[in-house]
Image (cartoon, rainbow, N blue to C red; front, side, top):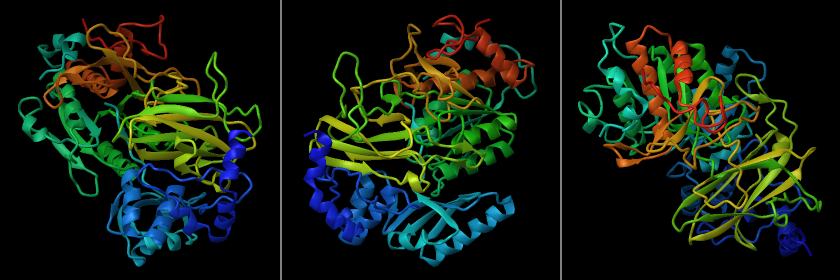
Length: 562
């Protein structure tokens, strides 16, 4: 008997009960300590959940209803879901269709009123997106309103992680003593990041004596207990000591949209962005996050974006099922085909696995339309038959082509991913990203560029070694899903900073501000426009791969040597 049939046999009785009781029984099975639950998938029963609600929220609501608030909070903590008391942070998407901007705002206003009437509080909004704290008890009522199109968790970015040695490596030091071409010696450079903890202690030494700060987080904390942005700002200042620095932070996708609009209005010229997103678009430069990049570009800004650190934590390939049992088969050269995808985790780590596939439809500038409704589901096992987490969004009813699972490792060891084709018209191209998952059994470094570095309007930056210019093993590679070459440039990583210490700042997070600083430096020292500077930097790059632009180094390592 194959694995799939064994799984079905394990819980035939359970699903008969689940069909009758649905939400309560489903929620009771969730175990929060990675002990798992005996809940293999099936193809011959109706998918539970609500078509207008992200599946993980449905599960959270069910746990609250059947096990109480403390179990719900435990579930939320392990999945990085924001809760305050019995309130959960969500994003409501209102119906748009072909509505005008005034109609979109009108519908959003209706949603805000409904949130408040149910005891929730609206935190911020952007066009049809309303970020709110909503009582768990009210989620079911909220999605019944016709004006609400979809209810989901906020998307959140992931960090791509003393004078930087990259200043001399790139030759930027040769420009520092030159007389400025412009009256204002440097450009306005924004470091758009998650937080700037410790930046005040760096003012006048590692940073300019004064900087402009603005937080779009709900709590308005510019530090946000996160040092990442301060370390990036240090490198920008090292590269372009006369530039005016703007430190801006956010936490969610809705907050970023508002931040970018504000940055554009302030006359900022360059954005240094050492963050990345999973499951936020088709990987072809479209989607809501990439739309921010396009808007910045259309307003004359240069957006420098980390390519990502995912070359060793990425897989993509077409769905294959030679035995026609519904499970995706992963092939490794020289080894038998397997229906499980193994990866390694370390005790105490919170780890995430993100799945998406090529059924996004067409991007309109504000939403994707025209998806075929191909539906795949994702399952995470600690070991057979212990199911740790699962994700079953209903793409047949309009959910985006994404799933994600998460857990905190109770012990060091192997974990296993399974992908089930619940209902699909074709075998889609699947893509997996692992956050704090290691030693992937089926590794595909190519195509690991993350969002929004995939945007044609972003300068994507890979990571090369400070000492010998070798490509760092983790540096994400192209091509994009529409076959464009990425990254565009590479820059040093493994450099020193006051924030992280001597030679301890690694990742495309460190590489990106080198390029942003180079733009700011040349902007102040030369008569060239930002687009002309881009052409100059691409032409001067040290070509480290095959001749010309390639999917590992782009045009090559950043160089300003005269």
